[in-house]
Each structure stands twice: as C-alpha cells, then as structure tokens.
Length: 273
Ligand code: PAF
View 1 (cartoon, helix red, strand yellow):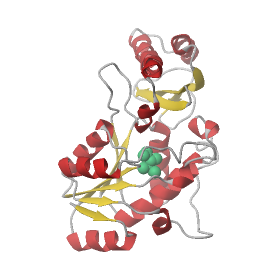
View 2 (tube, protein in one colour):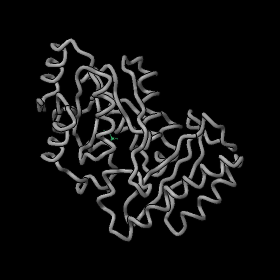
View 3 (tube, helix red, strand yellow):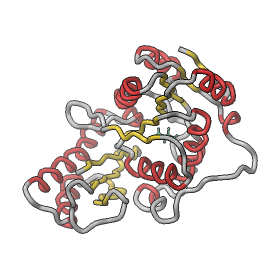
View 4 (tube, helix red, strand yellow):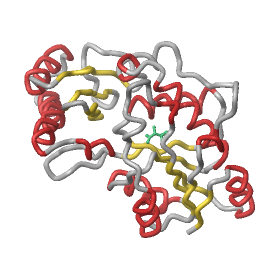
C-alpha cells in the first residue's frame, strides 16, 4: 500500500496505472461505515484510493475541528487490511491556495436542514470534494447515505459541473442496537450513547408507521419528536430525493432525516423509504 501526500504525485501515479479507480474520501477515524465504503470500492474497481484529510473549510468557527479524532496510524492499518492500494494524506497547504476560485453550495438546497444549522458547511464540503475528485479522477466515488444532504449536493455538483465520475451511495452501517456509526460517536459518554439511541428508534418508528399506511409527514414527525424528547433537535424533516420538504411520504422517493444534539455532539441519521 502506497501513502502519498502530494496531489500531483498521486495524480501522476494514478494516470500511469491505466486502471479503474474506486475512491473513498474520508476525514479519518475510520470505522465499519468507512470499511463498508472501501469494500464496495474494492469489489467494483481495479485500484482503491482512500483519502484521509480533516478538511478545515467545512468546520464552522467554534465547531470541533481541533478535537476531531485523528488516528493516522490506526487508519493506515485499517486501510491496509481492507486491501486499499493508495492512501492519500495531504496537508491543508497541499490542497488550498490563497484567494482561490471557489465552488459553492447552492443557495437553497445548501442552506436548508444541515445547511441551516451549519451555514457554509456544505460550501466547504463541495470545495474539498471538487479538489479531491479532480486529483484522484476516479471511475467511481463512494459516499455514505448517512450524510444524505452531503451526498445529494455532491451528486448535484457532479451534474452541474459535468464531472466524469460515478457517485455510488452506500447504506448506513449501524451498531447492533441501531446507533448509526459516526466518527463523532467517540465523543459520547455511556449515558449519552443511550440517549443517542432515541434517534434511530424515532426513525424505526417512522418506518413502521409508513409500513402500516401512515404517510402524513406531520403525523410522523409528531411521533418522532415524542420519541426524541428531551434531546435538543436540530431538525426532523421528510424530503423527497430532490431534498424538497414533502407533506406526504412517497415510497421510493423519500428520506426522513434527524439531526439532534446529544450533550454537545451533533448526530445525524436518516432512513430512505
Ligand atoms: O463525509 C466526510 O467524511 C467529509 O465530509 C468528506 C466527504 C470526506 C469531505 O471532507
């Protein structure tokens, strides 16, 4: 397994391989969710590239950039065991320039839900993902469905900028009790972890309501809020695959999303119906 930190070196290396490339962008602190993305990439491509970069431009002032878990050595081992060919580990200076040209999140879909609680976050995500995709130039890039709005905006960017990559959405991986895996789960105390289970429970309950014929978004959200109480809620929302709020769940075209604060940890989860 190669470790490369220089973008141009990586670009040249990959170009010389003339192979299909599966790419998994990450911010490190790898867990089973990332391993699942890597497995998909491994199964569908000749070469697998994983990047590990805690991207400063997607953190707002006062967020957890400084304390975001960094575990480079453990992450490299995980990548090696998962059959990754290249780990790309750039520094900020390798990727960002002074007064640079910027891609931005769209005015509406980039500033609702997660974008409303974290204004500017998605511009930072799109900025770095555009750079990373241009450096790696993968055949396919793999993103988790847990970050549903991020995934949607990346799909839009690829479409709007006529980029030549297939974006592959991958299902969320959960603990046996339902908690969606996230690098930020390490911040949770034992007690907070119990509280965090309300999030997946509220989503399971929503899914059961839909299975029993309840499609009204208002009714579903009321029940979810009851289950989530007393957590501080960022949002509970039901959207279609275009990320527009909808009054009624449409099977095959809906995502139910929750953002809640557990202690000071912001957790996201969703189900695709
Ligand atoms: O989902 C993440 O880990 C990050 O937002 C990403 C896509 C690697 C960009 O920094």
